[in-house]
Image (cartoon, rainbow, N blue to C red; front, side, top):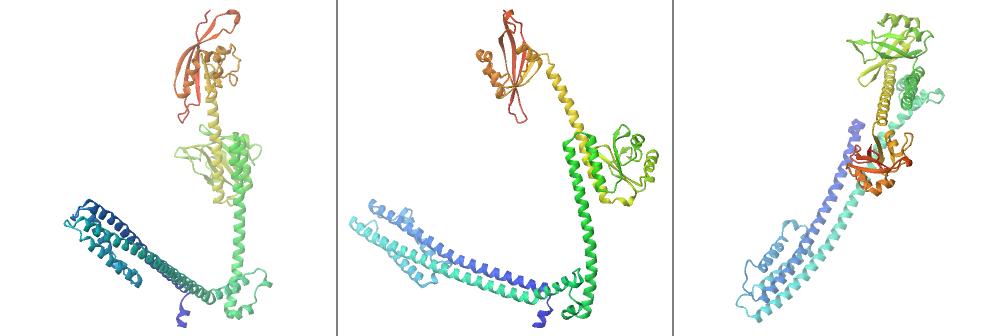
Length: 551
């Protein structure tokens, strides 16, 4: 048996421990469910007896009706007869096999027998009543049935009380059994866990501590070869020391690589953050491009860089850094040659490990003059089109890696966002200016009011019609709801319906702007709602047209 235990692997022993734990859990569950099932039977019996008790009370009521009405002939379809059949059915079901375990208790079995006899006696008394029974005989039978039924009900109450008592006893016993099994299971788990720890885990921990000691960098703090030999064989100790030495060297190399990669990644993430922040804060191409170039110089071994934007069939230099002073003029225009793919500008990063492989002879000669050994050309893309190229120069091919190429591609993508963002802003600005001019130069008065009646927009024609001056500022100063003329004429009510989505049209008369001329000023006004994207009406618009002034 001992030999068999020693031949089993640690994984096998651990699996056996887990299986034992699972079996104990199953046992606990079975004991608990078995106890619940027993208690459920008592609850079902109690409900059953309560139902019989209610039906007997109902039976008494029907029997009273039979006696009072004098209908002594028992009709099988009457409620009285049906109540007897219903009680008989429920009483007979007390003898079902499902209650065998409950009625194995002598006291409950005896009560069931007594109840059967009492109910049988009650039914026997009711059978004496027939159509030939006199009124006096019927009343005597009724009195006897009432007494017998009362006895049966009291017996049922005693029966139910005893069932509840037995239920509590069984519940307590099942609780004690479950608790005992649980405690026994926990003790078994603790015992087997301690055995498993002492036999398997503790020896492994000793070996681990030896290995940990052998891996210490300081030779004076490592366990000696003699100490290891006491625990392990001499050859094993020698092999262990050699492997630990190689492992220490490998770990040291890996730590250095990981540390370098971490610092490099942290620096590049910081650069991307700076570029993204500049894109979000500035519309200047120069600021975005110079932030990107400065960050690339800090995060890679690049020594020079330039940004070109596409213009017709060539590239126009925008910014450069790291090149000689003559590069900005000599490299101002660059051909698309070498950056084309089937006559279309490529959207893939071009890596020229050797600058002599660059296809454009003119630009290649300029790069060689600038002592460029390798070049990476990253497209600056916005939407589906290439807006330009981000040129990054290195002294030689070994100065950059694939991770550097990926990093530069991400930087270029941020630059593409900046280029597109500035273009969209400029186009929207032009559209806004055009709409403002159109609004202001309209040949009729036009005002926009908010829900409080404040004027938020007004063109020159409206200012002239309402105040007599093009320079008058209605915005923020004129409140439609405080216009006395509109209010007194009843037009203000019509105007307010605009916030309900209705358009109205009316005429209003103001006093002339020049009191010396006399007369009145008549305006035709159209009011209309201005809906937002949600279908609400936050503003209304009013169009003013001047009628002829009259005296």
